[in-house]
Structures are given as structure tokens and as C-alpha cells.
Length: 493
Picture (cartoon, rainbow, N blue to C red):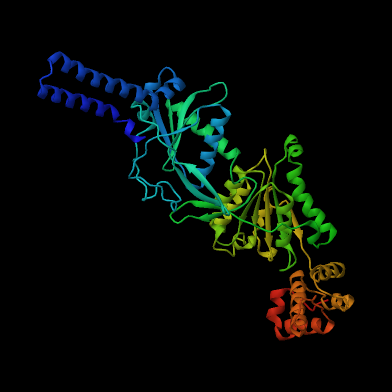
């Protein structure tokens, strides 16, 4: 209905045309003036009425009451990772406070949101943009249709934000104050009666967005942005049941007490005024189940937020830890911690080590934050990590599996095939000194040999000791020392 705004001009023009026509046809002057006056009057009345009905001023006057014409605006740039949370916070507050549905306001036509920008002060976006909220209210801008921008946040689930919505809201508490808010071009704009009230409104919205963050309760990782800063990605990992974790009972008990119980019993720890930041180091030879144990803890601790820091993300240790505190209770997973926490006398990456030590020194007294670290080389770890509580409170050794664990591993990995011809005792004896990863590969290779000699047909794969012997010969004898080292196999008794 864009024609309604200038419609009053049409009435005025029709009035003037009528005057000219009547002058040319010889109508009496009083009749001409009356006709022109009627058209002009109707046009003015229509314009005033239309502005009152379609404009935003009357809504703002009702919301702010006295002083609405003296509103000032404060804006805060937001990185793209926060847009959806802020948008959802505004919609949630609007519903809770029973305010009228937000309406669209004009935006500059030459300004576009670039979905590839990670920081709002990107060269793709101007530093000055459309009219402020306060000026739009004073000028009685017309309400527009809402416009949306779709953001891909988690998997295939699309998240979208309103890019031109204006919300009329109030802060809560003793100093409840009216304000108008809009998320435009990646900036949170607040119009209020005073500058202090506007800043309080920004804090109010940000706190609400953190409490109901779309990231809370998920597994996340921070990634370096194309320009600067960082962005947040969702990570999917398969669920691991307790039965899939084949470890010595004592190791599993210590693991659960130092991770799951710290999270589950955090209210009692908080009442006892204990530090809720806890560090756990899992160490042992490669292939002994450290990564699998972490996946089990992630599964068992849901809906705790998980922040993973591996590979290139290690350079974002400080940002990852700060995100973990915002979304606590949380787990911070640092696999291969020796990459950044090597003894300072042997490492060149001391800046990352200092960042890690600083972040692990922050005391958490409200919600638990557990650091889960793994390493295959505990002897090179910087000793300062274990000097203060909250860094490494518990080190847990993951040994090579004993006879009982190796039998359980074999039975687990042979599921789905016919292993009735397998000599379990012989396989347990021959796998002495092998890791869980080696045993898994041994069973997989045996299955390949069995499939290779089996005639085609949809029948269950039957594994014999000949397949088992051929598999271990290929891995150990033909693979040599390097393969045994990679897969975790030792002949030492």
C-alpha cells in the first residue's frame, strides 16, 4: 500500500486541476473556490489521518509518554555470531512484556548485510547508515513490512533475524525504563530518554541473550574469521554409551567422579564456596581410549555446553575459554594439550601457554567449568599447569589394556560377524602389549580377509583363525616397526 503516503498530494492536485477547468468553463468564483477548498481539505485530512494511523509516532508517544520527543540513541556493533541471540532476546522480551507486535521501519536502500562478514566494522558496511530510531520517531516514519535475513546456524536448520524491526520494550527491576530497540546492519540500536538508560537497556538485552543463547547446551568450536575476530560453529559427534567404554573399573570411576560429579554436584559445591573450575588430564599411550572417553563424557554430561579446541583452534584458547564462561556449565576439551603446554624451556609457543594459564586461573564460583585435556606425552607438559587448583586437579592414566580388557575389546569389535571359530584365549595372548586401536584394526583386517575368501551372497561373515593369523601377519610383520608404533603394539611383556 505504498500509494497511501502521497495520496493527499493527489487530492490537492485534483483540486487545482478542478479550479483551472472551472475557470475555463466560466463557473462562478464562489463555486470554484468551494470546489478547490473541498479537495484541498479532504487531502489534508487524509494526510493527517493516514500519518496518525500508519506512522510510528503515536505508538512511541504511548510507550514513552512525556519526553518522547527528546529521545537519544546509542548503538553497539555486534559480531555476526551474536545476531541471532540478540534477535531472539528481543522477540522473547516482546512476548513476555505483552507489547504490541514489532513493526518494520525504513532502512537505507544502499546498505546491505553481507553474510560473509564476521565483524560489523567490515569495509563492506558503511560506518554511517540510516536515520536513527529517535529521528524516525520524531519524523513519524511510516511502518514497513518486516524484512528478514537467513543465517545458517546449526546443520540444515535455518535461523533468520528481522533486519528492520523496532521493538518497544522496558527494562525490569526498580528502575524499569522504556526504550526502543532495533537490530539493523549488525548494530543494536537503542532509543531512550537518557544515555544511561540506553546503556542499561543494552546490558539488559545482552544478559537475556546469553541466558537463552542458541549455543547453550551444544558442542561448539571457535574458528578464525576471514577478517578478524572469530566465529562459532556447531559440531556433531556420535553419542557414546558407558558400555562402549572398555576401561579398568577404577579408571572409569575416577573419570566420572572428576567430571560428571563435579557438574552434577555443582549446587552443593557452590554452597560450600568451592572453586567450580576443575582440570582433568587424560594421559597414556596412543590408542588407549582417551578420545573415546571424552566422547562418552560429552554424551553423559548433556545438556552441558562443550567447547572443543584442537588443531588450528588452539590459537583461539582465550576466546574459547571466555565463551565457555558465558555458556557455563561447560566442558572445555583440549586434545593433545602438549602442542601448546610444552615445558617453556622447550617450546616457542609460550604466548598460547600464557593465555591458557591465565584463563585456567580464573575462579568460577557460580557454574562449573571443567577442562578436559589429553596427551600422549605427559613428560613434556609444563609443570606450572599443575601448580594451582583449577588447572590440573586430577591426572588419569589410560594404560594399555590388560587381559580382561583385551577380551572385552575383542568381543566388542567382533560384534556383527560370526566369530565362533575364533580362539579367544589365543587372541588375548597374542595381543599382549597392544592398544585398543590396534585390536580394533586387527579385527577389521581379519574381517577383510574373511570377506575376500567368502563367496558372494547376503550371508553373515564368518571369521576363522586363518583370517586372524593373516591379518596380524600383515600388520605386524609386513608393516614393520612404524606400523606397530602407529597402531600401538609392543612385544614387551
